[in-house]
Structures are given as C-alpha cells and as structure tokens.
Length: 125
Image (cartoon, rainbow, N blue to C red; front, top):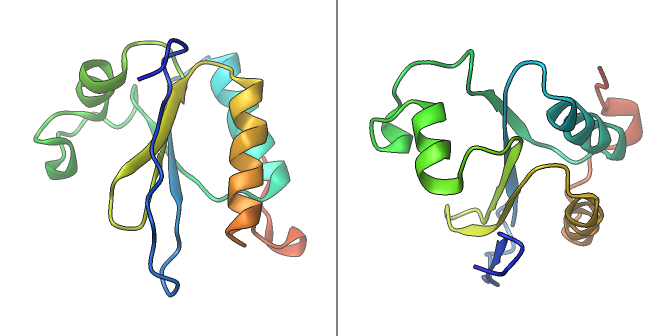
C-alpha cells in the first residue's frame, strides 16, 4: 500500500477475457460517490455500484459479511471505495474518496484495454 492509501499491482490477463472490472461502493447522500459514478458513466467506463446503506444482506463473495462490513474491514470508512480487479479476481488497484487523479488514470486504463462503453450505448443518470 502506498502513502496515499492506494494499492497497485500489475497482472497479466488472458486476451479473451476482460482485463479489468470495477466496483464502486457508495452510500446515500455522498457527493463524492455521485461525482465518481457520473464521471465514469459519462466517460463510458463500466462499473458495478454497491450502496452499502441499501445492500444489507451478507454475501459469500465478502466472506459472509455485508457490503458495509466488508468495505470497512478491508478498505476503511471513506466513501466511495473504488475497487478494480483483473478477470481472475485479483485487486489491481483501489482507492477511497474523490480522487481526480485516480479517475483520470482509471479512464486511461479502461481505454487502453478497449473496455469503454460506446457513446450511443451509455446510460447516464
């Protein structure tokens, strides 16, 4: 982990599988969460959003913890928490809060992997 709280690793991915996926853990009334999600929607970066205040069921993928318990235990309390994984499930990067530097880097990484959603297929709130 670096001093700014992010963690980065480089992993090779098979050519036939998407190299990256992103999950944004958010909460209600969080302007940084909304800003992060809207930016990625406008730029065509695919992500899955999990609202930790609304998704209250424990999940096997989180070791039987609720999304909130999982995020707090693994990444801390600052929202949003953005987790980027390789196709085999390894966390390749993560950060929390409104990180404009990480927004830019993430868009560039998804563009490099040809994972951007075409403009005519984007859904923006």
